[in-house]
Amino acid sequence: MVKTLFQRAGEFLRRRWRALLVVAGLGLAAFFFLNNSQGGQAAVLSGLQTAIAERGSLTATIGATGSVRAQQSAVLAWGASGQVAEVHVAVGDSVEEDQVLATLALASLPQSIILAHIDFQDAQAAVDLELAETAKAVAEAQSALEDANRILYNLATPGKQVDIDQAYANMLLARNSLDRAQDAYEPYANKPEDNLVRANLLLLFSEAQQLYDSAVRTYNNLIGSANSTDMAVAQGQVALAQGQLAVAQRNYDFALQAADPDFTSPAEARLAAAQATIDLAVVKAPFAGVISDAFPNPGDLVAAGEVAFQVDDLSRMLVDVEVSEVDINRVQVGQEAIISFDAAPEREYQGVVSAVALAGNVQSGVVNFRVTVELQDADEFVRPALTAAVNLVVTELEDVLLVPNRAVRVVDGQRVVYVLRDAALVPVEVVLGASSETYSELIDGELQAGDSIVLNPPANAFDFSEPPSGGGFLIRGGGN
Image (cartoon, rainbow, N blue to C red; front, side, top):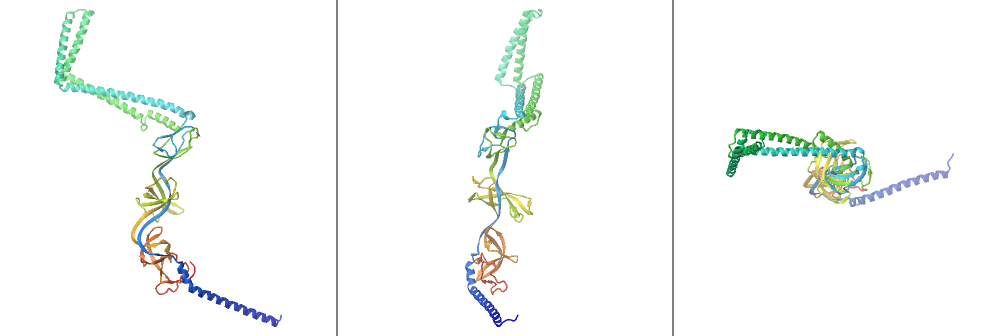
């Protein structure tokens, strides 16, 4: 189709209009670019946050979280089914080791436990009786030994003069009585044995002889001139009494051990078996602590294995935290820790590292080590199972140049901070040491005290191709 003159004219005008629009757009873009170049630098400078590099003290910490636990904790359960008869404690009460916390009604217990009560009483009575009898035998043997030793001592040792004189007088009187009895008996000595007078006089003569012999022995004992026969008899009595005492003591010791729960004997085994069965009807505290939770009430029907109480030893409050393998070698027993809780946000507690695990645990390819921190000033606001934020103080430094952590950037694998100098950002490579939550120690670098460190350098506001004289990067404008 042959185009008309008007069609060719229209196409020419449309092409010229498009060209004019392109030129106008380029001119407008150039205008806005030049305008930004003049005011962009001031706008960026006004949005920078800076901090002055200063020297000061630094407390380097390792942060971790964990849960509070008591030194000891136990959940106690019923050993048998039955009806709760008595509950002796409530939540918050302090208890001693082996203290009875609650009991079941005897009539509600299984038959085996009821029979164990009877068996225990019989076994305990038998043990008590044996213990009493052997204790009596020991006492009697001890008394007999003391008497034998006293007699032997008297035979070998002179007595006091007043006792000797008294014994001598008693011996003379006994001799006089013996002589009279002998004189009275001699006229009837040849009479028949069934003669009553003879028999009576002979009895009196024999008694007088015994009294005289006893008086002589007493006198001889007091003057220390006992004959060898008396000494041998006394020594034999002492040896016999010693042997009897040893046997009695051994029997008593055995009976005493049988009554001791830590000693195993047939009687004790029977007693311990009965006691173990009876203990199923009570709940006892396994250690001294505080009742942190209680479930039973008198009259409740409970089953064997049902939870009754929780006991916690709150004398020491501990926090277990997991520390990375990267930091674990900086943690040592005795280091201080600062602990805080969401449950008490306005309080800060002091702690000390009490244990550091020697072996780590691996979870999802990450190796951590358990570190235990003991609270030094725990109060009523600190309870088991609370979540704790723990900062382990691993280093305390004085008079070091401090670099704000938020100012540090990584460029090509190197830590860098930007310093504002003469309207330019100057990158300064730094080597950092110990760090806290907000600052790090400067170990090496050209950063100096008094430098103005930029905390929020723009991410894409630098021309890295041609740094100006002085080594800085000119600010070209743009956003943060």
